[in-house]
Amino acid sequence: MKRVIYLIGIVLVLCVIWYLTTLIPLPPRAPSENAISVATSTLMASTTNYTVEADYPQFGIPVIDSQIKQQIDNGVSDLESQAVSDQPAANGFPIYDFTSAFDSVYVGPDYISVRLILADYTGGAHELPVIIGDNFHRDTGELATLDEALSLTGMTLDQVASSSKAQLAQNPDTQPTDIWTSGSDPTPNNYSTFLINKDSVIFIFQPYQVAPFSSGAPEVTFPRTK
Image (cartoon, rainbow, N blue to C red; front, side):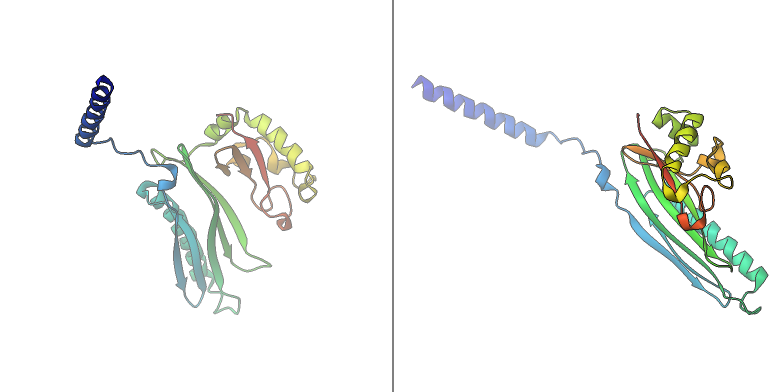
């Protein structure tokens, strides 16, 4: 009998606890890293002298999205100005072209990072791409600096440059020559394009910076220590 009364008591206590929990609102769940979805926006335009087909990412965070959109707008504006000035169609040349794409998207608790590839064609053998590494502080939307990127690796610019030269030398497509040596020298401008992800910091060299155009945009990777 006592055992039955004891079990009934436990059941009653559990019922009271359950009832009280229904009255106390649970705190809102913090958004997960996956709560941010990346959408592709496209800007298109066409005139007698140029065309535009620019894909770019939007994260649903106004302070970040507006900065990315501004970079696209600046690239399009520069091409438009040059096309108006040069009038390629009227002068018998191929019309100018601006395109953009993106990849290497990282959405973490600390940074939101993405690579933009902006390319314009204004005559010549091929278009000329420009690589932009956008690394935003997730909480403020401010762009990360080179000093921050170096800090994440625990290395100085001189150390990164020395290791970069060694990494480039191991790649047959980026074997150093007298022409390309200075492109990986330890100057802030040479290492101003980078990406941050969960495990590493990737420094990107622009086409023609450390190797011929056929080698694309070479990269060197360093593990994050922070």
